[in-house]
Image (cartoon, rainbow, N blue to C red):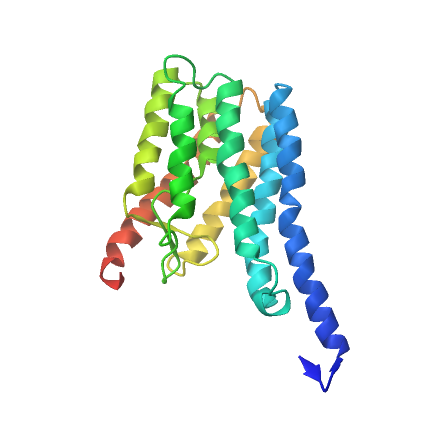
Length: 242
């Protein structure tokens, strides 16, 4: 890193770039706070838009950190810990608040919401939450997607509650779930379908967030179903690698 006692310009650039990644990760808190305000103001569309921004930030910071060797050039800051804190807020805490504020879960099922918070905390704190071959272990706390689909589908509260309880249980079931950035198997197909999902949901939201086109809504569910199905398949296929 040094030539003698002098830091080179390339070293300085690498350090600045590494700290930019940490700042980029931390910026998710700004949009998390904006999502919190939107939920409190009963603006579900704006809340989901802000959470979508946090998804984008989270989706690119990992590849940036690996490509720019952030652990080496900004070693005094634990980016993984910061990322986990922000992810818990945006993937779990705010979606739970969303479910409560918009009455997706009401009495007598409200107890399900703190249970989601606790189950997700165990998931985030699990030392084996990520496998050596690039998967998540157990349901990876995609509560943000769960509550948005609950909002759009408009099912009865008891169905929503059972859905969340099922996902809570899956946190502890050692099924491997695809990681968008690290799972190698079916990566191209995963990315193609993810892009398709982003396009369909964007069009659906722009048309009418509160009354989505049923055809587009049905098409948007294709990718989540594929994600769970491919995760089950790959979990079985790679079972001997554990």
